[in-house]
Length: 277
Image (cartoon, rainbow, N blue to C red; front, side, top):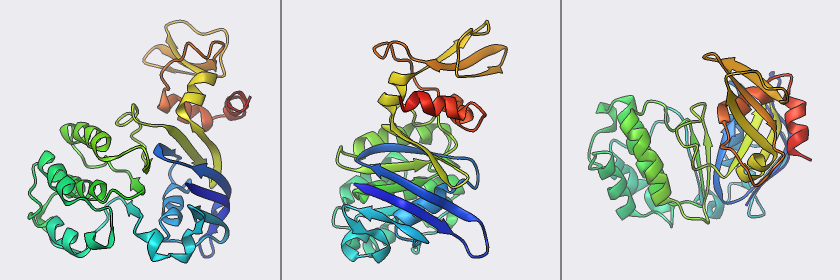
């Protein structure tokens, strides 16, 4: 369990990147949303122990992550966008780095790499950005850490690789693990998300299971304007809107893009009030 307790962080001579963020994040696959500069990557860095909060705490199973205890650090892994690995090949990385992670599964790494068409002996420096990202994701998932943090994992991946990533996540993760995915490409893994965490301008707007959102909101598309709605936008000549769900047993699929736009619009308070009823 990750516990964010009144967490704030400010960079030197800049406005706070995060302000009084409090949430509990359990096992499952969580979508982290927010506009550019919202504080998403800063939050992932704090959870990974790479940044120390200005105030407040980030706890992992009761331990303060800022203390960087080895027993905690070998159970958390952060894979950032365009992150450099300190090894020439994934096989070399596994030999040097993988030994620090008790849950590392070498057979899983081999299978993951094979699914992307790699052996692990390819020089990382010779790979394209997309292929390097594939190899890194294959490695990150094979560490089998209790907490895995992925920042824009689908950037640079081709269509086939994005499809493979979804099946790979399903295969590699078990119900005890926590995966937080920060991305603007919400459609790629939308069938997998157990909860949504959204930050905006350093503040936490939402942290809620997807089933609770679907029970409280309905997401619709219609050719004519709706009479009752919480948020609406027109795209390709159709009215896409969010309304209160009057029948929790008749859930609609969450439109993540529509929800994101709504939470950044003047309709935000109406949406949040409906979600917290």
